[in-house]
Length: 301
Image 1: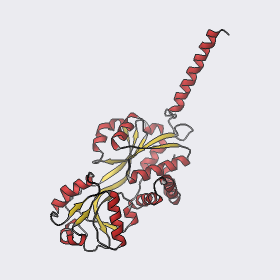
Image 2 (image 1 turned 180 degrees about the vertical axis):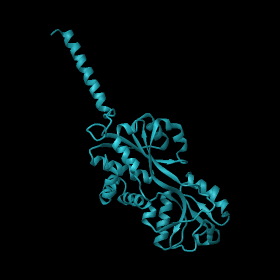
Image 3 (image 1 turned 180 degrees about the horizontal axis):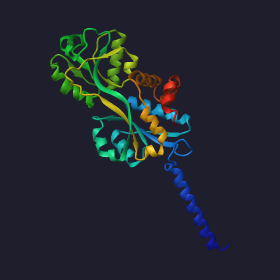
Image 4 (image 1 turned 30 degrees about the horizontal axis):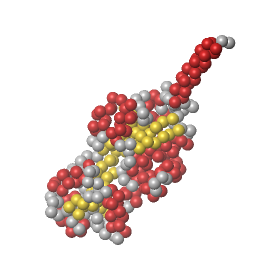
């Protein structure tokens, strides 16, 4: 064989190998069923919110037990939505709609698939321990301001809930001069809540659903008859374009996924107590303890 023919044959072989490698790198996304040997690689993007960390690790653990290769990537909301729209990310499990992520949804919705609502009680709240019997509504706060040392224990200064309490709750319930919103961080708020409960002391804090604190402590949300905290939201799962075509079984499972406050709170609390770096292990343990629920949702994958 002449050297020219050898080089041409080598080029053909190299081209065939290149096509094969590209097809392999794409993870078989042209395959229409995720129950075969293809389409078993996906990337889940998540934001550093407790419920998203919890659910993303739960889904990763369940899918890996079924033979999938799942990568988790933490991002801020803006680049996450952009990556999902470009197809660099396959799945996002914590889209707050219709308000919190409204701008991102409106910008990218034509390139995304809404895979359904898995939690429908996402609310902002002021909460107190259940033993604080004399305060059940935000209307009770002014008369009992001294009980709480004249303060609402808040979270991060830049949080949306902080703005709502300061601009809506305090003026609408005439709390100026009686209760002051003291902000620091979510971590500091939770530490103050834990300390108060251990000492059986009254405290009013900025909280929200879903949150693991409701699973760990006996808390009650204060009624908001004026609607100052706004309406509740829903948490959606979103996929990139053609996700439902590439992962039909997983799509059906996500559309059937529903978690209650108790279930989600217990999952989040288990992950919190496990500590940083142990999220996946804790999620898998929770899945084994709630096998009937997990099997009922993911049996078609």
